[in-house]
Image 1: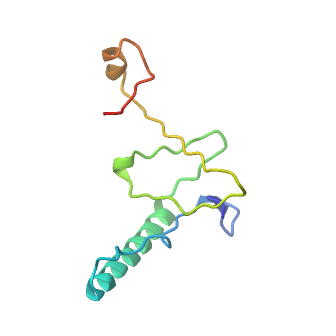
Image 2: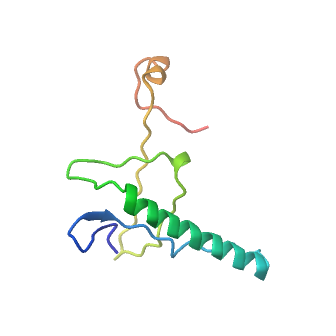
Length: 110
């Protein structure tokens, strides 16, 4: 499945997939129904907003979304004997660079 797709007008779009999000198994049947309904509402609202406010990512651009601004996950992955490589990047303020004596390679491990 491609993350980047094209709509019927040839406009490039980033795919959004809510199909792999499900209620936790510990919920009772009534809570599961409420959770599924809430997930459906979120998916519909995300689609509506994306169609109105979406941003077309152009060649040479990157879309950066802070983890604390966005609910996100990853689809399951199975490759042909190839492991998935995930890279994480951090954007830091100039003040943080100064506090670390100009070092931009800062470890955020606690």
